[in-house]
Length: 315
Image (tube, rainbow, N blue to C red; front, side, top):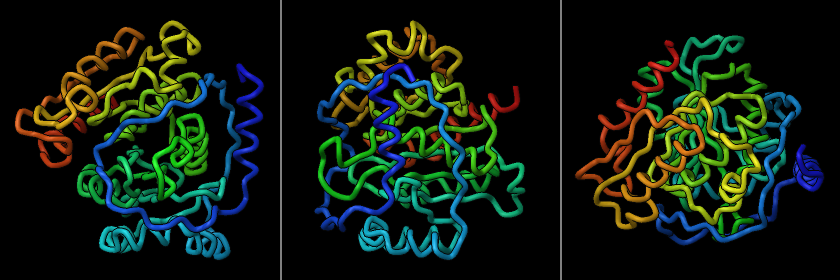
């Protein structure tokens, strides 16, 4: 670890063993919001997260079933929850006891040699079941697995109501390792507010030495320059080229209601920022008829991005 205080914070995170008090079901919110309040600056860690086995026992299943956040998600969107169940997805608790994730592998997959994986972060005030639902037909067609993390805690808009990148990355890394996912076989996707976190997560992946992410899809959410981990990138705390050897697809709709935050002007500026730090933007999708949800509302957009992933896998 480059800074002692992050190490202590990370250990404290792993020490949490029970779920939080059940939150009230939040009212409907704008899925597209990506404004993230300021928080303390986050230093980049040199991660060596421990391997944590995927929960499989009856007691662990009961733990996630009783998690208030999962109960809230089921109530908020029972159809998409049921879709995940019917498709055979596993719904498992995060190792810190605060949240859950949806894990799915195509039928016939060998758990000892899993297929490439799509790791997806939902948008503002949303649920992991939304990401799973949107990605499933494409993943099933191409033989990819899906890991959808519930990274919002179900109420509020403060930074404490969402995982921060340095909190999410160890959880994601542990899940991937526990399921024997190989480096450079993962597509990281984030939509809207989730997209805003893809930049820090990708930098953390490189700084950790894990290098799971072969491609990052930043979908309708630019790199907020006042977001703490992005400030750390700008200040050189991840080195001069934190995105070296990274590959990106960026997506925007020309009719996005917040063009300077989530739309094409924002994503063009973010392309230049990522390139400045050594990244390669293989594709910038500018949907002329699309709004904030242009990516998944147009199958051509999704398949164009997945074609980039396929090409990188086959190099």
